[in-house]
Amino acid sequence: MGRAGAGPGTLSESASTSPGCSPLASGPTARALELPQLSHSHQPRPFCSSTNHKPQTPTPTCARRPLLPYQKTRSTTVGQNKTTSAMAAQDAPKLLWNPDNVKDVAESVGIPNLHDDALRCLTQDVEYRIGQVLVEALRFMRASRRTTLTVNDISTALKALNIEPLYGYDSTRPLRYGEASLGPGQPLFYIEDEEVDFEKLINAPLPKVPRDMSFTAHWLAIEGVQPSIPQNPTTAESRSQELVPKGPGANPALAALAGNDSISFRPAVKHVVSKELILYFEKVQNAILDDNPDEEVVRLRHAALESVRDDPGLHQLIPYFINFVANQVTHRLDDVFTLRQAMELTAALIANTKLYLDPYANAIAAPVLTCILGRKIGAEDGADAMREQYQLREFSASLLGQIARKYAASNNLLRPKLVRTCLKFFMDPDKPPATHFGAITGVASAGGPEAVRVLVLKCLRAYNDNILQPLRDRGEGVEFEMLVGGILKAIATMIEDERVAVNGINGTANNYATELNEFIGPILGERLNSLGNRRLIKHVLDARNIE
Image (tube, rainbow, N blue to C red; front, side):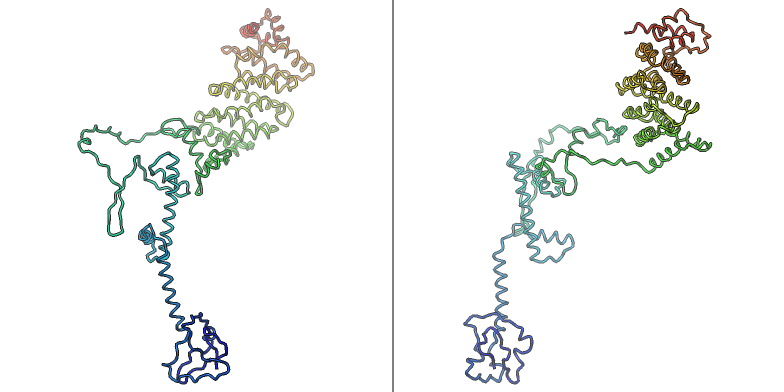
């Protein structure tokens, strides 16, 4: 017996079955089946009319059994789905882009069976993207005050949308398109060729004969500097390339709107040096800094310096060698051997005619000046240590003269600056005698005889009274003699054709003694007069007339 009050849309759990027929709604499947509600006109006759009446006896044959609700609901649901799909297809917007094009592209990338829904979605997306590009291109066209859309407008729009532009499409004239039909609903567009009058083409002058193809060489860069020649890009082109945003997500239009066209800070560029040059640099360092007195070590040291002196392929190592020398001189002032090797390496670099060191002249001169004018060089005391110190100052002064003469043409201020620095230390009474010796040697080497004649001689009288006389009174005999000898050697550079006689074999100049004592002081005057070089004395006395 069915439950009283059971709705027509739910199958009763206790519905009876006819004898001889299979159960229509029994088991867990029937209990779990929820059927949709039907309209009033399609409701079947209920099994029980009321709870107070007995149910009617069912028909024993299956042919007369009434149609159950879920059977009508199933057929009705399928029909409704078909109707909904048909209505959705009718309501969908008409595609402007031919789906066959999308299908052809899908097949070309290995997707032979593309579902209709996916094909339609892709076609709609293609239409949207094309419209987006066209709208952006029209903006550029209007901004250019034009009424004709060009290829450049499309390319600019693609760049603005962060899409890779199309390459190989460019035209200086508007393109005209023709239309041909391949069938119903399949138009084909093509670019119309420009019609040319055959008679005008025949009578037109012949174009210039192009040059034969050939290969020429040009300097891409010289010592890291790019020459301004037609084959190389100009400075303006290089700067414009630097300002273009780079990277996969670069958007020039957004960068321009954000005001980021100019780059304020650039990352440091790593200097790429080959492994062979790095190994060579390390070997040279180890060779020249090894103070082992063994013959093999000394031979390797000389070989390393000779290699630096003659090798033409050391351009990339120039800043590293200069930095190495500067570091050694700065941190090893107490080691005369290291300072001497640093100056030997500097001399080897200067002697290499294949290297272009003009931009590094100031950087090379700085450690050389330190070795010349340093207050204290070396940590040891004694005669041998003092001799090595003065030899180092003399050798460094000779290097300073080479730098001043070799790079004065490219740097007009280099030589006056070096001479002025040495002269300042020479006239400073607070400096030690060793610094004065290096300073006067540097003035004579960097400035030459003219600097000694013009700048030094007129200052020797005051120098004699303020520095030499107190030094002799303190009893510093060795340093006093070295300083006086350095000054006399600097004065002797004014004559180049005659050696200065140190033993007086050229005779004496007693008649000039008084004049020398008044001009350069009694200490230097007596020493110079004792040399007996009348030509040198005459050069010194002639300097009195210089104002």
